[in-house]
Image 1 (tube, one colour):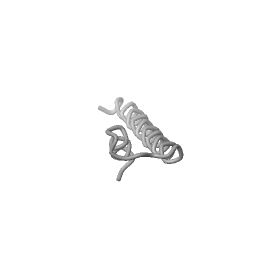
Image 2 (cartoon, helix red, strand yellow):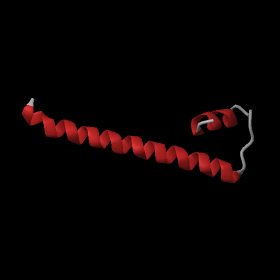
Image 3 (tube, one colour):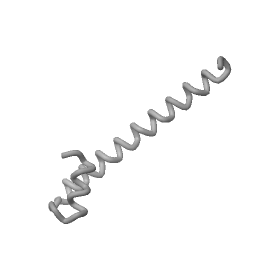
Length: 54
């Protein structure tokens, strides 16, 4: 189960999470968000680098 699926199931009341499990899910989601932001930043830099050549 992915962190997103785990959180959704918890929010629907289908599963119970301990405080430690919830913290792990939240940390995993925060890391995924930061990696996505870094990827977007890298893409924007690459596009800016290419603009003079287009």
